[in-house]
Length: 318
Image (cartoon, rainbow, N blue to C red; front, side):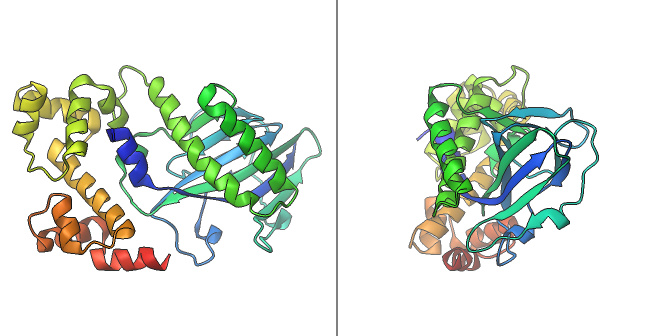
């Protein structure tokens, strides 16, 4: 498995739909997924928000960035769940939605109907969550990813499926929200792949490192042999650079020194195996490259702010 597939597997997203919204222009609302979208009030460690435009059009704005226009058949994803505005046109002030919101009922998401009576827009709002923080892929993505699903061979069949599921969802079809959530997971992967294909030459971050001849080779080695007793010198030798030149190049692109990256990745893998494997903590520690269970437990608690046993119990309870 290549490094990108490794990281996709470790993200292990779970999708859901929390709002079915119909607007008529002019309209503007603020949006950010919060604890209220979770019945038990426990949010995943990381959230990705998404909005799919079923009909009409809208603008999405994060902070002071330029608004992004999104048309029917397009989906916009916010990899770090940043607060954002959704509107019929740029420059509008957000309205309070409380009086227009119908709370979830009978397994259906909340419904929102509001606006000034002009051009209609319908959107489905959802989320993708995972319990593993500090994933190198998510950290390197921009604030917004937009995907025109009908473009390209990879997205065409997903777009057809998503459009059909959205129609079922509007009609109150049983299980349609769950189907939309699963399709959103596939759309996230597709969006990342397209973003990688069009990555600017001067871009930094984990994805840029993946495309670099030297750093990409180093990342592949770290992911293929995670339990190996790597040193920066050994990696540099494998990729044909001096230690200093390699360390500088890796840190500049990925944003962290090679051994810090490896330590973080080992803990990400360990968290995944604690959730999915019945293996003992000691065995998992050895599998990801720790010489002792005690050292692994200390590192895990520093990183996740909980013990491996407590982490596993929480995942089992979920």
